[in-house]
Length: 160
Image (cartoon, rainbow, N blue to C red; front, side):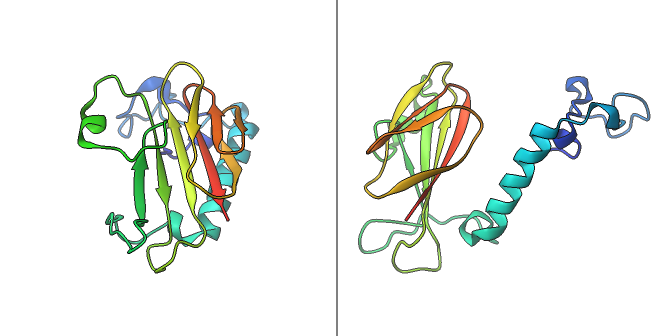
């Protein structure tokens, strides 16, 4: 999630409630423009604009098709579908989510988002298919059926 000004490197000094401050805490510092963040936000925005499954008007339902796929399915790093126990584990730091087109009866173009909140690199097993890394906040390497994702990163893969 981005706050207006994040793409410019505006931090508000960590203040998440600076809307009523008319001082340097809430002002934009145009001299500190971070072009790397601007480029990343442009890439995220373009990806979302091109793919309707990334900008749904309704919250995903988890509805399953006859083949077991769904509009959204959550996975562990090992590639197993998340269970109630996985969701309630206090030690789980990483997961992945498969997003398909909710209006299609057959999975067409899919996205697999890897969320690695662990402090170290982790290996994530991918669903069957052909995957390409299209966006990431850190280093990730794609193998035949897995991705090694750096710690504290998000990696977005697009399936064909």
